[in-house]
Length: 444
Image (tube, rainbow, N blue to C red; front, top):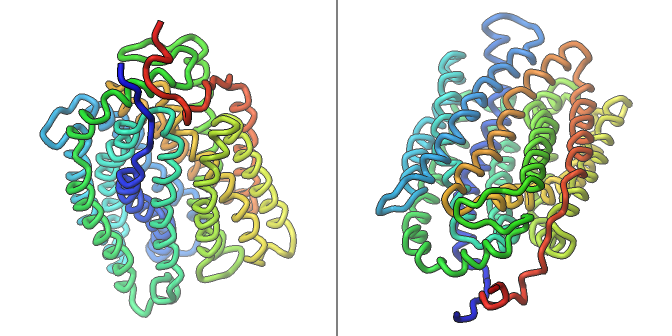
């Protein structure tokens, strides 16, 4: 059999990252503005009071839908056969409907409609999940397993630019809750996000032809299966070994725990800035986290190749524990209003979050085969979305009883638990793939 080199297609990977760009930009806008919109509307409707618990429930109820929709659309796209491929039809429909609905969230806020905001948020979630799983599954569909960590780093690098765009828009005075001369001005950043979504969709349709790529990559994908970091290299309909199953369960639990931690801060950081730090916008900290993550993605991928995905994630979790724990300590002191200190800790968190995200998704889909990538992608997102469904309620209730300082205490505890569970995963690693050539090395 002819020798085959495994080589990542950087151009195609970058294009796949453009879709992730719009996904992260939309969620950054969603997670920053929606709690503020809800808090304002609840206050104007029902009077002054602590509404963190209610806001947490509303944010969580949206995410509950994802528990069912992400695996559903993942499995449906696995089974889909069309001229456009398995994933593209879902990406087209989900993107188009989402970009139409998204600007209605600030519109309903501007006309003081709490019901309108909640309904728009729910619809966004449904159609974002319709294309989110298939969009993410495209990368492992066209990338051999040993190269997925590097590919994921590139996709995250491009995607995080979208989060920076969103953060930059949030810092503009007229696009803040307090600084907008008219609430209708808040529609502009949402509409801008929708415009970028349609542009990214056009590029993806024109440049990524699923069926054609599948034929071209057939032999490379088969070689990648043989080099999989599992106890027994997976093949079509191959059953995982007992150790592989244990690793998968521990990994899913770890993902759940670290999203319990991170999403708590992600959801209530804007509220914390308003209530505790008394600043109009503290999004500069999340921008720093995002930028540092971006800088970490490429060298982080090289680190994972050298020391393995497991230990790369362990380092990332340790960074997160240090950063969140530091923020908690600061929140108990008179320095709790000093934004610059939080920015420093968020920068460390950016390194940790990058190392975690670089390797965790590839570790999950390492267990899959060509017939069920969407299913395993659904497992990854179900665990993360389940965490995001309940953590706003839990931390919102905790803050109502113990104060806003408990936000970082809560996040630190869950990140420590994630580290403890993850340590027990058995590291299954084959030789580095850079010098692997051809199938003849694996023939019996």
